[in-house]
Amino acid sequence: MKTFAIHTLGCKVNSYESEAYIERCNELGYEQVDFKSASDLYLINTCAVTNTAASKSRQKIHQAISQNPNAYVAVLGCYSQSQADSLFEMKEVDAVVGSDQKDRFLKELPDLIEQRKRINYVHDLKQPIPFEDLNIQRFTRHTRAFLKIQDGCNQFCSYCIIPYTRGRERSLELERAFELAKKFVENGHHEIVLSGIHTGRYGHDHNTNLVALLKKLLEIHGLDRIRISSIEMNEVTDEFIALMKENPRIARHLHIPVQSCSDTVLKRMNRPYDMKAFIKRIQQIRSMLGNNRIP
Image (cartoon, rainbow, N blue to C red; front, side, top):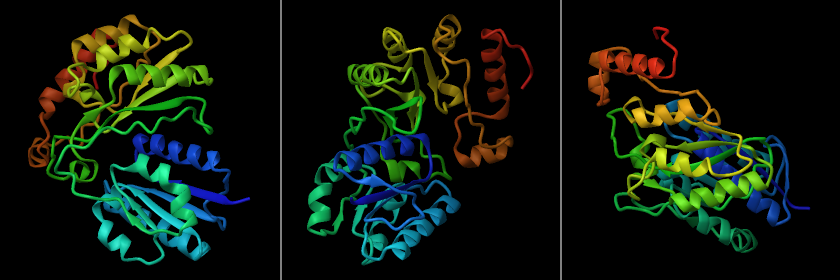
């Protein structure tokens, strides 16, 4: 039996997309093995958000090549998007896939491997690109399911590569999100984590928002818990907090990044708040939820 190995770096969105690669390989009859083992196919889902993440991505690429020089090696994700040309110059790397055309790669994978075809599916992200949900049916290694509802970023913080590696903001259509979430529940996942690069910006391109999506998902019988992945302070609206308070199925947990506690640094970072505004908003959120502890 043919084997595949996968290594995922980075965020929850990458974890979601890796599940699509695993599902596709299983459909093709490949058996998953540990990434440290010799394999016929290696998939490295990379990250480039920090120098350390980029370095780890390179290490995993070289590890795959050294373990089986004859394997088909596919490098995917943000590092691929930012370093496509240099990666494709490596003759041991067969496929380079960036922030879109992942669905195309999955569909063409059998022919790519059979013909030992080298491909570079990375192009400039200045133009809008469509949202790819990758049609995942279930998560084989987790009891909870991750649902990617948003991708890309328009904020362009001075320190961040994400807008250049993930492209501009785009969202999963509300009815499609409902359909995928319902399928997860039918396949045994009773807890769903809503994930995105800018989760709180969900729906801005479809004339909707995160609150509308949550209300729709709460209609799904058997969906016991909804969690929100990282969300920006200025995207946590009063309407969102009110919905969280009155619906115990929405987990009362928010990961709100601050990046720095220095106003000078925040300004240089091009972050849309200062520490006074951040602390004030956190206090308001805690008060609304009935938790008045000082952050």
